Amino acid sequence: MSGVIVIGAGQAAASFAAKYRSLDADTPLTIFGDEPVIPYQRPPLSKKYATGEMEKTQLFLRPESWYADQNIDLQTNVMVTSIDRAARVVHLSDGRTAPWSKLMIATGSRVRELPGTVTQGLSGVHYVRTLADADRFGTELQEGRRVVIVGGGYIGLEAAAVCAAKGMKVTLVEASERILQRVACAETSDWFRALHTSEGVDIREGTGLSHFDGKDGALTGAVLADGTTIDADAAVVGIGIIPNTDLAADAGLTVDNGIVVNGQCQTDDPDIYAAGDCAVTGFKGLPTRLESVPNAIDQATVAGTHAATGDVPNYVAKPWFWSDQFDVKLQIAGLNRGYTDVVTRAGDTPRSGAHFYYAGNQLLAIDAMNAPRVYMIGKRLIEAGKNILPAQAADTAFDLKSLM
Image (cartoon, rainbow, N blue to C red; front, side, top):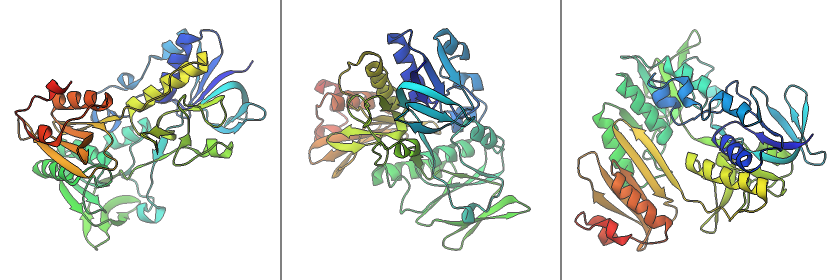
């Protein structure tokens, strides 16, 4: 009997299944995940989980028993290898096929890897994306060891903070002129550079990695593009992610930096949905792919509702993100795409503050560092389509809440 099939077992998959099952208790619902574990959170992997502050069971989005209780057939360690839209089946890695009436693609993303000529196949070079990756990375977190972090985005900076807090000697290498260049303004880059430097992280900007060196198959160091050699016992590579769109593309669905979906999270095929890191939707008139847990949940909830009922309002993206580094929580509201100006609002302490992004006088986004009240007010105003004028943002005596 055909039913609803979910490809992937991450946040979007679990959220879709929960929403769908809350609205339709009877239609067969199957989740196929290619990892040998039940759906879990990814953000804590390189932080609290790798450091031992969080147990594996605390990562799980739902207890294993929940899936059976909800009449959801969760099949782990099984990969969907292709989608046959004509026959309406998926082909599985174990040779089986499974029929579907509706299909949810929640394949997420994978790490962007360095070429093999750079990594040399050496042990001690880590990517942290899966639970197994985090288990391996956690063994490296020992005081006094030397680690090289490749990539100065949020992934790299978070890894650097974890390693430094464990008493490791940390060198972070960023090929661009500054850390966070792709995602944040220079003011936010400067703020986090100062934070990391104060915690002992050695940041090298404007020079990329040439290759890793090793001995007997184990990492011994990193050679930079400028010829500098850095001794290292371990390395973490965080140079971005790539949406997993191969299944959709091979099935003839439209893919453009992600699987293109409409306001109900449907693909070109109205019976096939996509959500999360792998999906592209519209935001302020432009195709947008949001790499965040909140977006995965929101999109999957819309998709699950529409798949079960055929009726749901258009999905409207509400971008917000966060990053934890040392004792600083960065909270981001909105998208800074197309900004022309940045306004700084001083914080109550040296390790707090906010940067407001503007297109002219129109507020687009906020980076708030240890400033939860500023963040929350700004987030609500942005989502409501209201504005904070630049002079108001800069004036710490001005009560932003008065604008709500």
